[in-house]
Image (cartoon, rainbow over all chains, first blue to last red; front, side, top):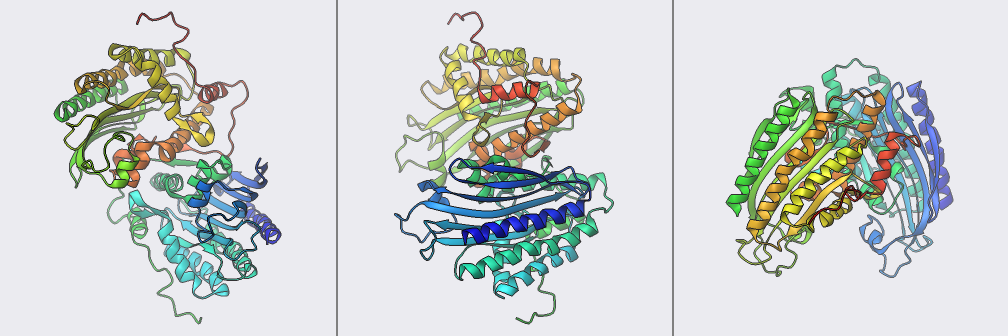
Length: 311
Length: 311
C-alpha cells in the first residue's frame, strides 16, 4: 500500500500540474525536491504569476519516522490504538491549492492522504483522509453545482452514502469560528477512513483526486478571463485574507505542521500570493458580495433541487 | 485602580492618535464604540489609507465578567491563585499597531494591560503586562538604537533592572518558530507584573505607553517619505506576511481572543492592510534584505556599545 499510494499521488501530481499549465497558457510549475532529516521527503511544484493563476501549488510527500506522544494525541486518526502501540509511522499525501487572478474565478483546494502506524498490518492502524473544496469570491450557482455534482459522482462510484456525509463534514470543517462563516462553498471532506479494504479506499481517493480536474477546469475556462472591476478585485483580496485566517488559525494540518517542525514552505504553499485586511468591512446590502457571505453563513444543499438520483 | 487604569489608557489613546494624525497629515482616525454582552466594552480607532500610514489602529477596552475554566488555565497571569478562586475578572488595556506605507519606515506595536481576578484585593490576584516593539523591513541601526534607548529610559525611571530583562523577554516572545526568526527587532515585553504596588506599576506602564511617541515619531519623520523601489515595496509585503503569521499562529492575545469569542475586528486591527506570500523566497546574499534577516535570526544587544549608563 505504501508503494501503491506513493505511485498514485505522483501520477496525480503530474496529471494535475499538466492540466493547470495548459489552462494557464503562460505560467510554468517550478519543481522542488526536498528530504526530511528524520526520513522521507517530497516534491513541491509551484506556479507563480501566471496568466490565469496568481499562485498554484501542488505538492506530494512520502515521509516516515517516529511520532512524539503529543503528535499522537493531536492526530485525527488512529485514536483507537493502544497507548503502547509503536509510534513509528508512514504518511503519504498530495495537496494542492490553485488561486486564480480573476475575482470571478474561484480558488480550489484538494488533498488525499494515507497514514500508517507501525507496519500497518494491525486493523485500525492505517487510514485515509482527504477532500476537495471550492472558495469563490463571487457566487455562481451553476459553478458550485457543477463542482459538487462532479465530486458526488466520484463519491457515488465508491458508495452512494459518501457524498451526503462528506459534504456535511466539509461544511463543518472549513468553519472560521471567529467570523461565523465558512471559508468557501464546500465540497467534500473525510478523515480516518478505514471501514473498507485499503485497495477499495485507494481506488476511491484516486478517483476523487482525478475528478478535481473535470470539477474545476470548466469553471476556470468560463471565469478565468471575465471582466472585473477594482471593487471586485478588492473584495477578492479581502476574501483571501479570510483564507489566510482559516489556514493559520484553524486548519489542523497547517497548525500541526508548523508547530511540529514540518517543512514550512510546503505547508504555507497554500497561502494566496496577496491578501488584504480592512477594518470592519461589510458589503452593501443586496450586493453580490453580500450574496456570497449569506451562503458562507448558511451552507446550501447544492444538489437537492435536482432530479432524484438513482442510487 | 480600575478607574485609574481606565482613565490612563483613554488619555493615552487620545495622545497617541493625535500624534499619528499630525504625523500623517491627511488620514483621520475613525472611532468605533462597542459593548460586550457579558460586560464592558471599548473604543477602537482606525486610520486607513493615510498619506504616511497604510493602516494604524489604536484601541482601548475595559471589560469584566466571568472567565471559563479553560480561559483561566490558558492565561499568562494569576497562576498562583487557588483553584476555587472566583473566576470573575476585570481587564483594561490599550493596544496599538501602526503600519506605514513606506518600506523604509517600520511598523510599531505597543500595548499595556491590567488584569484583576475577584475584586483584586487578594495579593497575587491582579497584574500588569505590556510592551512595545519595532518591526522594520529594512534595518537602520540608528533607528533601532533610538527606539530601544527611549524605552530603556522609561524602564530605568521605574527600575534599572527592567530594560535588560524585558528586552530579552521581547526577543523570546516575538519568535516565529517555524521560520526560526523574530517578527522584528524587539523592544520590551513583560507580563504578570505584581512585585510592586499597583500605583508604582501603573506609573511605570503609563510612562512606557507615552514613551512610544518619542521612541517612534522621529523615525517616521525621517523615513516616512524616503524614496523606494518596487523591490523594496515587495519585500515589505513579504515581511507583512510574516507579521500575519506571527499574530495568527503564535500571539497569545490574538489566538486566545479569536477562540474565546473576543471582538474579532478589534483583535485583527493589528493585521496589515496588505500582505504577500511568495513560495520559498530568499533575499540575495549581501543584500539589505538579508541584513535584516540576519538580525531577526540573531537578535542584537542594541545598547551594549554605548557608554556605560549611570544606574
